[in-house]
Length: 127
Image (cartoon, rainbow, N blue to C red; front, side, top):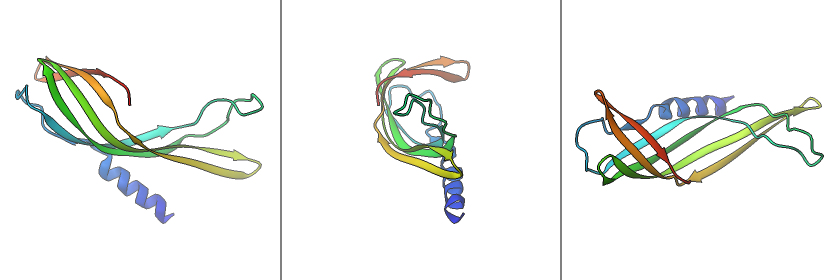
């Protein structure tokens, strides 16, 4: 139970993303601290071909990223995230929880265009 409380506190602390405020300083590299909650489940088929009957597990992610200008309104956005994912399975009165921890390196190309007093951002890329 104590571990669940610690996870809750950790998730609460890192849920809000903290970063540089949106401003008109285009053309400058900016940095951000990221954090949030993951709602994960493992899906697929077992070795008999039956669907997996797993339940949702709540995890978290935390990390950093940079936003590096390439040309006006286009940015390269590399990052580094620590992320937990998993699933829960109950069979025959026994509950198993599977948790996997990842270090992810997203490498996104982002379009950031002005929209009113803010921005619209669309990005894609591998991680």
